[in-house]
Amino acid sequence: MYTTEWKRTHNCGQLRSAQKGENVVLAGWVANHRDHGGLVFVDLRDRWGVTQVVFDPSEVKELAEMAQNLKMESVIGIKGKVIPRPADMVNKKIPTGEIEVAGTALTVFNECKPMPFPIKDSCDATDETRLKFRFLDLRRPQMQKNMMLRHQMAQAVRRYFSDKGFLEIETPFLMKSTPEGARDYIVPSRVHPGKFYALPQSPQTYKQLLMISGYDRYFQIVRCFRDEDLRADRQPEFTQIDLEMSFVTEDDVMEVMEGLMIRLFKEILNLDIAHPFPRLPYSDAMSRYGVDRPDLRYGLEIQDVSQIVADSDFRVFKETVASGNHVRGLKLEGAGHLSRKQIDQLTEYIKIFGAKGLVVMEQTEEGVNSSVSKFVSGDILNQVMEQFKAKAGDVVFLVADAEKICCESLGNLREKLAKEHQLIQKGTFAPLWVTDFPLLEWDKKEKRYVAMHHPFTSPKPEDVALLESEPGKVRARAYDLVLNGSEIAGGSIRIHQRKVQETMFRHLGLDREKAEKKFGFLMNALEFGAPPHGGIAFGYDRLVMIFAGEQSIREVIAFPKTTSALSLMDGSPSHVDQAQLKELGLKLNKPD
Image (tube, rainbow, N blue to C red):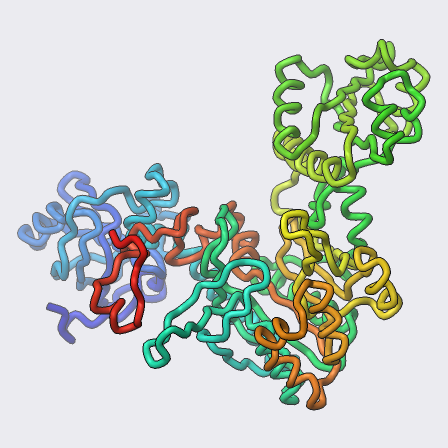
């Protein structure tokens, strides 16, 4: 039983030489214990650190025997005196390494049964085991470090926005279902049978309403929910840093966001990051890097050689260019000679993204080696290599296909080569803004235009006239913040006039009746003095992941789901009994 007798005087990371001679009470988990020639040492751990406790059998034999029989990860309390460690026994790896506590009393609050995996930084357990025993996984020092980092970043975010005059305002978790993009999680209403709430995919409409309400600057660290296919950096429930500002342009929003990033890098990582961040139009990002979230920590820029190879005798090149498509590629410096197996593996990889094949050209001291040399003249091959400024040992990879396939295949090949050839310098960060996105993109499956960002994004004023004639060419007042190849934030200037919003809905295939049914509350509000406004939302989990140097957002979320949206620890989602379903007016088509 825990009583005031065992109330802690210090935590396990607090004691130093300055406390020498003090009598202390500590509590925590048994991280390790060992017998050294009669002396029993116990490493006592809590989230603040580790303190070494020593029990001397010559002082109290029973106490030393009790310490010797402690089970790992049991929760104990100790009393003792702080003493200096012998000079040759100082542990410089931990802050408490100059002292230890000579134990005079010991109690076990809770004995631990055998563990499914050890509590240490490196963990060999499977992901499934770690998630099933997440309450134990969270004890590991690396996980606790990640959780503390997440907390520190959240506090820095709140301080920054408060300093900038933003108000933190909560928005509802139970809202109207307005599916546009990912599927909603819906919640049945007991009070209103047959009707449903939705969990918010984002607070988008609410934060726009707050601008109409005159709050001018809003922010929130908010939970959001999307019922979509998952991956390493995606979860069904996730966290956003959400904000909105009135009477602003794109530059205003980006300036505030850069200030936040500068503060986070300085406060959390003690890094001074160069600013202002570079800006890259969407079209340039796609043509030069193949993706709209390019990683600028390395080169491998994509180039177009269509005009050079258009008149070659290689049918694939010639017909591709004649049909209005492209021949594009990238150069890998110093790759040397690639084996047939390596080339085949890379070819199979890009086929995942729709490419039909991969042409590989190697620059040597003697000339250009390539499987297409017998179809393409040496002059044309040399012109291609000259455009890439290739030197002996460099390899050029070419794809001939439609623009979208060239972008996707070469963009992903670029990332794969950078990782395999270790072109990414650890500890470096390369933020940039991607701007001038298309407002709309054509969905072949639904045979209609869909919003590239969301349906409340404002078109560029100079492109508004194209909405009726060439909607696919209209650019959005949208901007994404990219860091190290990950999109960490996306935002836009919003539509603030009902007439423009109705036009946007019409181009998205929503007639007036459907638009009114889904978004009538917002369009109605736009007629009551809506100011020009814009904002952005940060993927907070992804941002913390990058700062922590992790590869998955699961490592920085306390209780994440699997890639199939299961919680292995508590067994959700789970069945509910018939009484609950009846109370909600629900009936399953195929009950289990």
